[in-house]
Length: 579
Image (cartoon, rainbow, N blue to C red; front, side, top):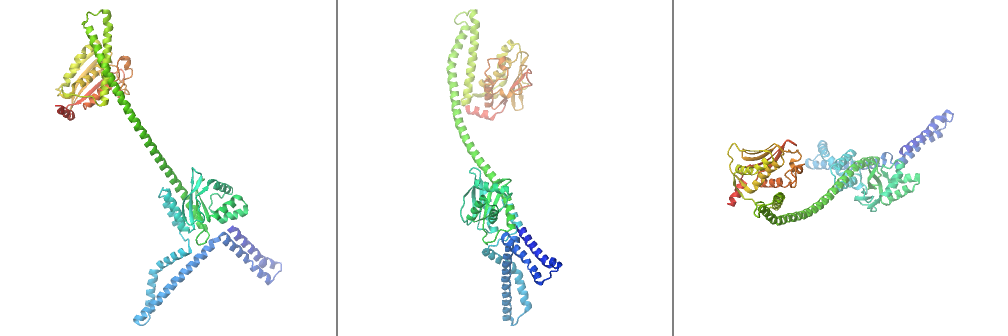
């Protein structure tokens, strides 16, 4: 519109001037009055340009005039001050030396001007700025300041406060309000306001702005900064109800500028700026600066909203984790109670079974030995099987009792000095007949050097030693079982190596767990419970030792071993306490 009016005025003036001064004389019309009329054609250019200046802010002439006026006033004041200062200096020196010195007066005045001009000018600018509401600023500095500050924080409140307060300082409007979109309520809610509003607004329906922006989108103006008077002008041209309603709302609330904050194609916020306190219109430079700032603000606001969302999610997650932890703790308490009840049940049941089983074992043993007369051959075989199964149940009951004692911490240990070689030899001789019946080569390799006594619980370590030997005999169909005791630095190692079924690599970690057996073990020895090695591990760990298994693979045999420390301060202390 600026261009249109300026060009129209120039064309109209040019046509009148050229017609009266160049074209008409060519046709013999030479009249001084006509020439005078032609010269006055320049008035059309002046009128059209003036209208563009007043209505469409051509060249921001009003700002230039105001700035020139203010600058003139400042220059006049500074000139007056220094003129008065020069006069006072000349009077002062005349009073002292009785004569005036133009050179001395000039030098002193020049020094005072050099020192005081800039501070005086700055002070006068601040005074005029305060009363005339000048909005002078350096665009590059403002953009740089916003760029630095908007990227320096993720706190939405700090961000909103900076945007509104700094815009209020730079452009000197009556007020600045920032509205942000609430995704849940689908409303633009006022985040912060700086200055005195005409009418307070807290929320704006998204639907209202959707209608306005959808309409403006058709005109390809939806992302522009809206100036109230230009919306009115557009409405006068298009006669649209939406634009009319929009203008009325802006006018009612004293909104001069509407600055949409877009992130890509999504309107995330809106800035409202009131009329300038000085009464000036917003210049093209103002609009350009606001457009740049709105783009920077959009990214910063989006980052802050994402950060807020992340914080809320973290808080929610924290609450959920705390809730789940509480539930787990409660469940854990219940599990402990159930585990305790289970252990107590096993313990009671095992004790209750132990007595009748011992009696049954005793009676069967007495019958087999002929205490009640000669046993018929027909009865001897099933009676022998009954005795074996009774022993099996007694072993199982004993294992269950041991587990109950271990889990409840009631397993008692009687530590004493033991010769491990003698203990192993004793168990070896006891199982030699069993190995011979299985057709195995059963060997004991004695240590090459003397093994010192160890502090052990004889009964429990004997159970473990026997368990390892017995397992190797049970799970080896043919070949050998080799038992060995040797010294390794400050420890003694007891090992049993066989040529039996062997172990897969993934089976080894499972061997020492409760009710766990190697794959296919039940096919070789159906009576196993999977408790022996678990109990063995608990006993050995209580002795401060370690137990492990090794194998080269299926069908390649295996080795089970135990290591005890020769000098074990902890067990020595236990033994000393016992004595």
